[in-house]
Image (cartoon, rainbow, N blue to C red; front, side, top):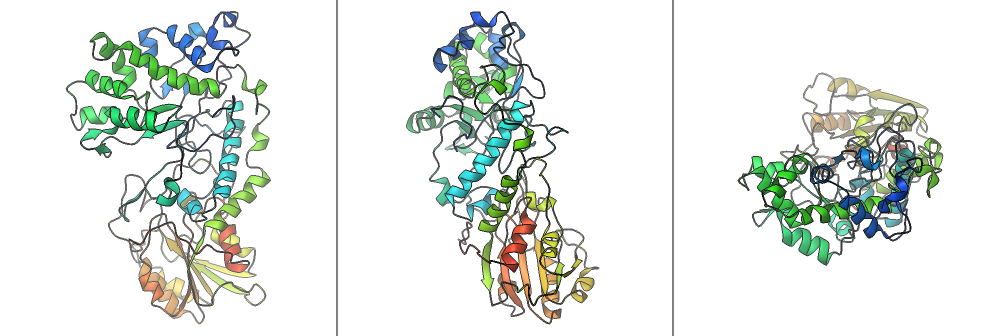
Length: 510
């Protein structure tokens, strides 16, 4: 993070960008006659000196309102409101408050869910995806539709297979990351270490993250974490005690409203020194200064010419296909793959995810540039493709349509698995089997076909495939994760053409 205006932000627990939402009001606007007297607008000074000057001009109330993700504007200093919370887990997403899609930018490239990208074990591919996402993020910022701080990637080291939030990276990948810009401390209710809420733990925030890791950025709590350890686990006696603990521990920002509501009173009650508030803001502002937020109109800065034409480009679309192709894992093959496009003229594609598009883009998503389902992808290679969902939903609680799917078979590609109704953040699974009647559905179809069934599983978490491995009519098993907007093209390509599939799974069997 030594460049003045970095386009590609490094990896960390979470990376951040800042934005004047859909307006075009800029800090340090040269049309403002007061700009010249503000040292924080003087680009010849160091970031640290500029940040200290800005903080010195703020009242205690103003300081408090800058410690939250939706930082209030300061009109007397020409500083607009901006939103720190934007998401970009596998493409620019509007799941945070900082990104907005409209007619100017109707969508952004949606890459595979990161657990599938992890299966490629290709660091250069991750870099190229990060570059594409950051280009699209900067382009959206330039037209007032995104921020400069994105809280991504999201790092989860899984110790319990049924856990719902498998959209993280494997241990091998996590341990190689270096955290430089911002660390997001996850939900305090779930993340107490040795009985101490993580965002109130000075040994973690100052001792490890700030000092041992040499974090040159800011630390933000997960949304409502401070409120959680006061209201729900009763770790402190008052809200002021809660915010004081967090600030003294080294927390710099709160996703939520608690620091904004209670910091001023905590200082007045002598529960925390105002200098702790100042230091938190200095860390925050230094990041924004690096990113050019206080350097006037972004179109005059490096990367300022990026705009809507740099989003959903042909190169980014091709990269989305390549990312999904490289992540798909061949779990088993008994000679059924690859299909010969010369001899395979008819194919039945069945299953609740066979024509799914929303399922492919997983969670923490925005609006994709466009989606190609497995059905549409295979129709590009096979002259006659019939489709039957078999189940009306991934939950597959109704057997009434299973018979129709069994009758549709010739050569068969069954696309089954999970979706966000089965596994996601806050929704764990109770077992590792396919939900509802999906196993029965697969077995009925396999037994009815005259050829081989190719089983395609969409999921983030692991699936017990033993039922399929023991059936000789199932000729191949593919795990395709949640493959993003281009998933259908990638699946069809790997089944019908190159079959250059990964044999390495990012999920542990232990």
